[in-house]
Image (cartoon, rainbow, N blue to C red; front, top):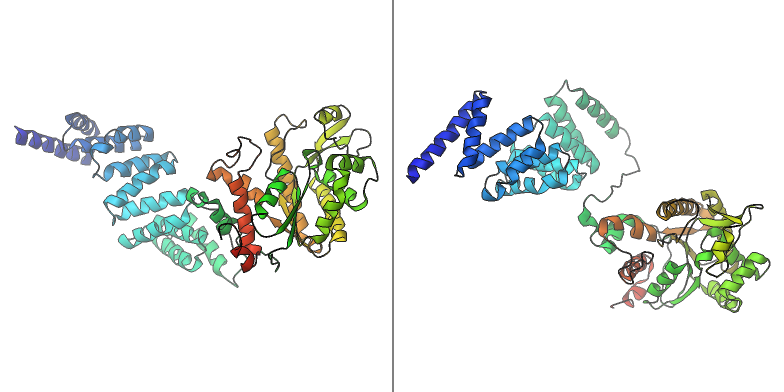
Length: 485
């Protein structure tokens, strides 16, 4: 009975192959349905055939549903994951397709189509570094098609391997001499490799989410690559002053893990624009000379001024964190209106002043003046600008504080870039903001894990930021005396 049953299934499968090969699709569909109901060794053939028909009829979601239902029952059948991956690829869901293609290559390591499909999928997902080995292997396992040669050439261009890329582009044109797309790219390739080599190199965004797992390593490999310290070396017992809002205070605490003389000059939220920062600098330089500096003295404590000035005079390193771009301005005169250190102060100001985001140009002018005042105190210290990743607390300018914060931080980041391009200012930029706000979306939550606040960056991330600063700027003696040494 068993032998008879197996024989019948094999006969049904052979009949399906014959009907499909002869183009008798109605009969093939009927036989495939019978095989799918049989639950025997040949059952997968029916599902595979129907999934192929789904793909031909542009129904990839139906093909996925059909094949995933049986994939666990046929773990050694490579056609099933291959077709599932193709169906996901037809839906531009490359992440879903990848594990199925890896399963195909695991089952048949020397499959040319399998390696090509996996390489192509990784390339389409923007992961050229991972794609290249599979595409190269596919080309070695089978006579390469024009499509494979073209894709391999494109992948290698992205990796800046231009000589090999040019060879594969030549191959693609040889295989498809009349293909207009290949002819155009071949001409571009010829221009790209002709003449002297460019001094500029393209630097790629990290391709895989795995690159973001370790934030400290991410900084070293992708954010600080090529960073110029301008020859500055931080040694034990040197003076470090941080200035800014709460983030600057956290940076100071992280610096204190090393044998350095660390001071912090705090700005409250009410002093966190560069207009208010400039008022603080004027107060440090000359004391109370007008209403604005009087508010600064009231908020920061007149008795603390001498202490702050002495710290600046003794500093070897000055880290200035830019905070927010908006500030209050008088509706009639346009002058800065600085809030007092009181909960109702902003609510009072909004009745007589406009809360607006300042421009890049305004911030460049303000910070330039701040640094000029600093140089009067201390012409020798290294200035490092940073952008605080602490978000804007509130806004009356936009209906969304999140959008307002994006505009605010973008404005200050462009201003910081322009300031560091001015060599006369002798200021560097340190990418704390990029670590916390630009890279963290690929890493996971880095705010509030210590205290639940959406405004507070995790202490570990701050320590990683400073540890990488020490790695680049510090002397061997300071590194050896640091945390865990």
